[in-house]
Image (cartoon, rainbow, N blue to C red; front, side, top):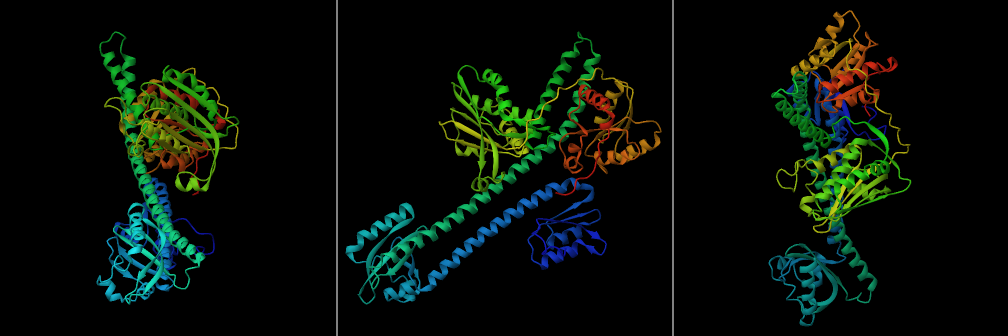
Length: 638
């Protein structure tokens, strides 16, 4: 904590509740005394509810129990986002306060006269300089005895009427010169300027031109200052409104994605059971069995449901992906013939692929899904035919673009634009198109997951997507992927195992009973000896009691007490030759935290089927021994 002011500004503090000679409350007290705006998260295995509430009251932003560390990364990301938004809001509010201070100084300076009036002519208030010009007292003004229409000579009534009309139409009146009658009847030449502040009230600026009427330079300077102040206030208010709207939209999409991911994860376990038992039953039925068609329909429905869960996982950016360095042109041109068949003869497809395009890092299958979804969406927008243009190019996004699109940083990107000449959409539809289950199609004509899936894939790939459309003028979707300075990966052909059977010993760990049971039955049917455990503790006990070799650990990633990757790490010390296969319904935080994806450990995506499980198990067992036990370790906080 002593380094808080000696080093660069810290973004976030994560503290254990109790430590030798120190504690989270003590750290909180230091942060509070130093008045530092740094998010503070407590991690503890023993903190009680009352202590947690007291810590939150003293400035902690959140607390995470050590048995629920999967909450830590979302909590860190949330607090960093909220802290950034809070600081941006404070900067904007500070700018507004400074603007108000400058205006107050100008109001009190006596340099120019300032009055607040309504459009029917009543003067509501005025500063001392303006009162001095007119010779009235503040009491006379506040009581409504002074009307600016009453102090305007007849020959200037037309100019005054024009100024009022400008205020009504545009909010700002062009500066003009006029005379006004003082209380003693003497005319005073004034340079006037006015702007609306809140209908029907306006603020007017007046300069006495008695001795300085010939000073054109002064008039221009005052007009410039008045317009600058008005523009600065409007820009600050617009910027604050845009930032708040962006924050609300980001929070809404994040909440929807988290909900969709959680539903898909639980649903995958259910589908594993339905699909697996369906295939096992089909394997036992004869082709002529009357039950076979019923089981086939069950499997088809479950397969369709599995497709929906994959789309939900893509939306929530929680699906296991195989990122490779890709040539976007190569992917697009490889799909061109298929896209032409999908569009039909009444839609002209134009592909404009830029030369020497940069590379991107993404999952090829997901990029193909993005292109396909956008093309199908464009086709539906052109029911009577039209033109679809798909274009790629290298672009550089500057700081101004990044400021208006918080999801990206300034830098080099590869852009893909999909433009159709279809019916287009209004602003209200554009604000909802990336939300899951939103659709403008008739009931039964779409799931409403096409564009939300595109949004999830682009976000998971580190990119940004935007839409530009107007009713009747077509639509353009623009996607920006970060440019990667590397050559495209060479995709090696997939080698299918010659047989799915084996006689090895497998330690199966799965906390869902039905999933565990069907997985055990599938593996035993293939000839494997299976040791089944409900959780990590039982798995450790089975491993200790089993004296013979265990060839493969098949484990779920997210389990109570101990995660699958942590279990693999514990077992690796006594069984270094044992290979590891992780099963997951989505890319949980623990996978990233323990480095599963980066370490090379095999991952099997749920839902399970007899074919996918048996094939993946055989592939892992047949891998070279040197790659059998990748190192598993918790990644250091970034």
